[in-house]
Length: 378
Ligand SMILES: Cc1ncc(COP(=O)(O)O)c(C=O)c1O
Image 1 (cartoon, helix red, strand yellow):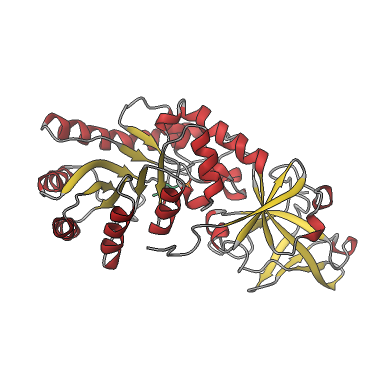
Image 2 (cartoon, rainbow, N blue to C red):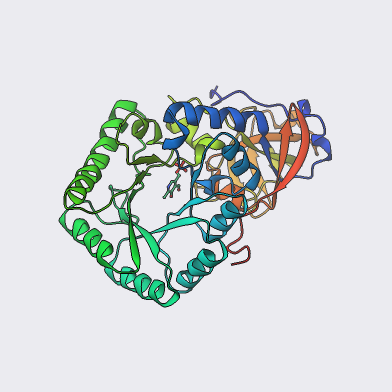
């Protein structure tokens, strides 16, 4: 028998769940709170944290983080930045290069929220020039972090002489502010913690050495924003005062990271509610949990984890259907509720209009997923 990754939550044990239409995303308040506490414990201080809000996209969670003293935040879209600013966050890092009309949107954001300090990333001299010109036209500087590539090869430039030159160019533009360095190392997923630590340290050392040389040449490097959840405990071991830690998934965790990082003690806090809609054969049951209700970036067959049915196989998923092959399928009736944890939570929150908050074992309230859309007002 396959071992479940974590303890199951019986849908029938939650008061009021029978009134919730499925599919739905449930978030467990006490677990969110304990995951945030664990994140702060690992970081050692709220001042070292810059959590990424792309995982949850929810204003109430930003408010929980602010109540815990977390002031600096990271986001992936301008809508997320607008959500953060609307919550009263003053330090926002939009970890993305604004191109095309997003430059004007960034500037509209600056004018709408003049009290907010917002930074963006760039890794290209043409973009720096465009940002400088745009900032000059509006008379408001734009702060930019140079995006370094620590080996993920998604965006960024490798630390080294070319990157140093680009940072010097950034510093010389009259309308840009050099805001430091950014590196995201989502490829550092070694299950063995020692191996992961070594890889994370190597990526950071290259960035820190470059930052040292820039500072010796008189340039400001106010921050190095680094990492996601996998590398978070590794970065937390490092002492550099410029370092800011930017995990996102820690707030909810998910089945993918529970499997990948066995040393972590975050609890799965976001679960999907689904119901049995058909039983096409004695060993097959179909649930109302299509790929319109969960992240479809893990390969088909590996998108969900049912701790209550660890032997079930996901054999087919369409827009509104999930078909499970399961020896014990005949135990279930049409309409029975089941809970499962997505393999990847961040794109899962994006496909839900609202989350159902469970507090103290009861369905307590609903929160709209504030920044799931591309645009709020700007
Ligand atoms: C640039 C950046 N920083 C931080 C994160 C957070 O990483 P994680 O989801 O592993 O916590 C992500 C996630 O995609 C990211 O793209």
